[in-house]
Structures are given as C-alpha cells and as structure tokens.
Length: 269
Image 1: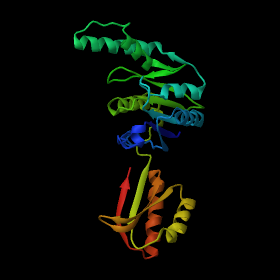
Image 2: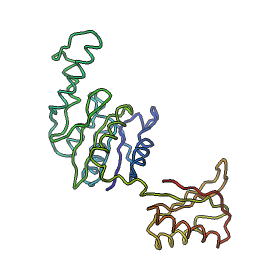
Image 3: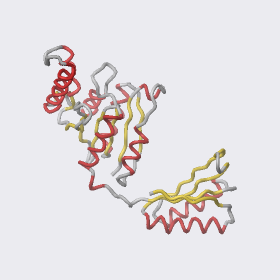
C-alpha cells in the first residue's frame, strides 16, 4: 500500500508559512514502520486542487490532505473533493452535532448564552459540509472534525486541517484506527557509507549490480560542500533488514576492492 500527502495553501508556496507537515508525517509513519511514497504541494486554486484530488482518489493509495477545510472564501478543499468525486456536498449529521457542541463550549467559556441560529454560528456549520458518504475524523483539539472519502480499491483520502496542533493527532488516529495491520516495525533498514574521491558515474555499474543481485533499493546522495566531509557521496542500500545486511556487505567489499577511500558508516531503522 502506498501512502501520500497533499499540502494545500498559497501561504506555503509563497513562503509566508513554513511547511511542517512533511517532516512530521515522515516521523509519524516511520514510528510505525511505514514510508511516505510522495508529497504534492498545491496552492489555493480550485482547478488544481480538484485535479490533484481526482488523481488521489483514482490511485488506490492512502492519502492525507492537509489544509483548506475551513469555511472562509480561500478554503476550497471540501468543494474540490466533492467535484473530484462528482458527489454533492451535504451537512454530515455527526459533524453538525460536534460543531454545535464546540459552539456551546465557546459560549460557556465566554459566559454568554448559546444562540444556535445566530448568523456566525450558522456559518460555522459549513465546516461540517462534506462530500456525500464521507466519514468523520475526530479532532481532539476543538471537536471540529475532518473527513474521509473512499477512493479506488482500498484507497482513501483523509482530510485534516492545516493547523499542526489539530492535524497531527488526527493523522495518528487514522493510522491507528484503519491501518494498524500495515504497521511493520523493524521491517525496514537503511545502511550507508561515506565515499570519498569517486564520481557517481563510475559507481553506477556497482549500484545497478546490487539492485539486480539483491532485493534492495540503492541510493546515492552526493554533496560538494558538506561542513564535515566536504565533497563526498553518501552511498547505501535500503530495504528489509536481513537483505540489507547482505547487500551492504557486498557494497562495502566492492568499494574496498576498487580501493576507494571510505568514511563513516550509518544505519537507520
């Protein structure tokens, strides 16, 4: 199963806000033995959001979409999801109840009477308007839910707010609730070694042989101005731990046979 994320908002692409979701998603997935397959960044363009969501629904992947599910004019995600699925938007009954609970909480905190028919309170119900047949995602921060829409096959797109304090616990809830069977702690390992004085082109035949011989992925990360190692290549293999150990031993011995200067070794799990 592939996992992806979509991060929505002009503020990210303009640099007014720094994206924190990518790094946190990698962390949350990694703690469960999962890996992120891709990340898409999209501005507040309804056409682009709809096209991106249409691909996500058709992919059969599990995708988390961050941002744009509020009820202000620049929040397009709910409508775009409905357009991508060709479904109507409807007020989700459970979301309606949760939003009203939140409005009552706010009124109580302010010492004011709760007025459900007041214009601003009626407007807040728009945050519970989702594509038909959506399922809600609980929001432990302020009760305003996200939502899930099924895609092709076993795929789904899970929509959460852009606010990290809300989004990250909601992502964890989705993972623990629906995808625990896919958790694979200790099922992935990455071994690499710092290589000096070699060009990637000269190492390519070795990398190709390793992938043909072992069920691993080979990676090569060159650097020209690293503060500690200077010009070097971080060369390694990743995959299932047992297979990685064999492939990595092959890699290191091959580099030694080529008499290439080597530096520190690193292991990530």
